[in-house]
Length: 296
Image (tube, rainbow, N blue to C red; front, side):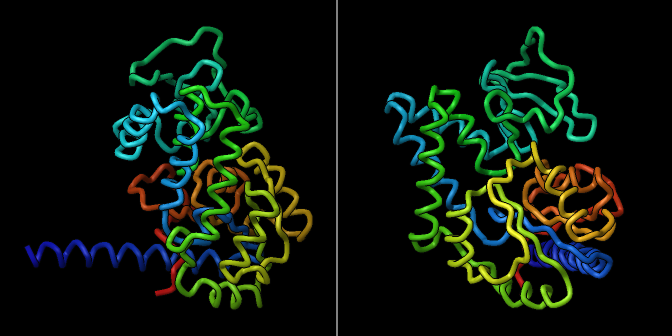
């Protein structure tokens, strides 16, 4: 057992170092680095549990148990509602979506049954992620959001829950964990690279979180309320123009494959996916994945 554990840990350490080697190689080749904020520049995922509890405060109590069950299944990968899918609010179904071909392939209902949707689009470009009908499930914020909408919460309720969660993250101990060594690491990078922050968070949340993390002096540009992935390409192209660089001179780093990674690769940029997932959704020499930006 001890020998087996050694080989498991040794294999993980080799993969971790190999992936960091790729990240360092990408950094050497690029002049501009684009970062996401949530799930990228801090550690931990306890805030998603806060989000769940805040959403449930706006739900009738009769739905709480079913909400918890669906969320548990989603986290365990036992439900069709997983990262990389698209929630269709209008039809209340979960679509499988290919981020490169943009095809909507299969729809599942909340009982995990395949269903046919009449007049459904065969393809869905990122510009059609309007968050009014189609919602990309790109990271941990969106499964509880989708479950809440399934049970009838309106957008005003989900926005209240999101902003309340952000406030709690900044004010409650243990729910927002600074990434070890990240501040010094970014300060060194900023001496030779342009560091840009593009985030879906609103400006007040951005300033509050960056100040808490000690990163409010790092970035040469901050783009809040970015509405990724719908507007990701637009923001990336603006970065190319503003800094007069080619795609191969830019690196995008984020925890959301659909928001930060796939669009970057499509434009010819380098990209690093921050994830604990074992999935490898694409084979590309400009792509790598790491578990954290922690410097240890």
